[in-house]
Image (cartoon, rainbow, N blue to C red):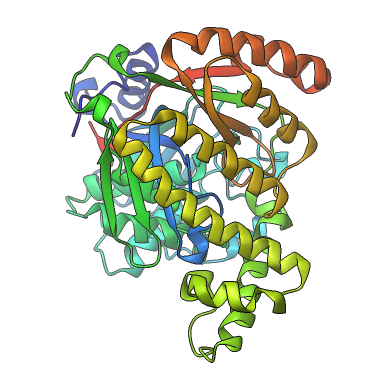
Length: 438
């Protein structure tokens, strides 16, 4: 693993430790902290649920969960985003699907109505559900305080997966469980797919659990195989982030929406599966699971004429994006950020034209980023129905790019821009590391 940059001994880090010590009556030195970073997906948009190949890396922002074992079965949680407490026992049996009906699947501020705020602990219950379902013996609860990076909630940076991973690591640590990252990828999938009813893939939790600073994480979502690809410019394993030739820009649209409440996401998944079903039937392989990774590229080229225009666009996005990922991995390994950036921007365009996941403010923001000084490439982050855009930018021009983006977006979307703090409209980030317990 490369050098760890986040979190340093920040005020937020120390506040969390003091808060848990106060809640539990323990010494501050007894408090453990889960660091669960947010992730970006430079290439591999919307293809993880089809078993595609994706790329990802974490950033130096995310979820911090301070906790101590409760020494009994009780769980007591407080949040930096919400008032009140969540209390339950690890002896309870969480009911899958109940949380989805309550529509309280996203922990972070900005995604809830007043009614939903009382359900902000659903991810903790989901973690208990996942661990128990796979036969883990959970006898000890936790006393914890969880807090997300300010302003990054509902932004398309996989904050929900970061929360789920944080609770998993806390319960495992408190119960002295040794769980591999690949096992936790499956556990977090159970939280989101079964307990919360979201039909997403495994990209988010894979990036959070497997990433290493200076590397691009490549994940085959069909075989679950992964590898870390280091860019030549970071081969020195230096702890000085200023050696990095790029920064990561996060540009926020001001739109916030709970992913599970948007029918666009699950409907796109269904359309991809329908396209796969038709293509597999056309080649006599209808017995295979209807996901596009089970369709050979040659079969797609031969039989894509059988798809209606809507399904054809979804399939075209999958096959072209999978190809962009493979080319992008080569460009990254060679240190060719210009080519890497062009592929990112092409991914963004396909998300708009073929996957049809954008909306006017996000598309405007995407186009502004493409014109910003020093930007190698840009695309939507997350599902693309709300949130932010990401961009790779030359390190020495990140400040100029930020100023340009703020000015241009304030002109085309003045009302949305006014809802955000000016300093928070664009954030400059560095690459991060994997989730871990400190």
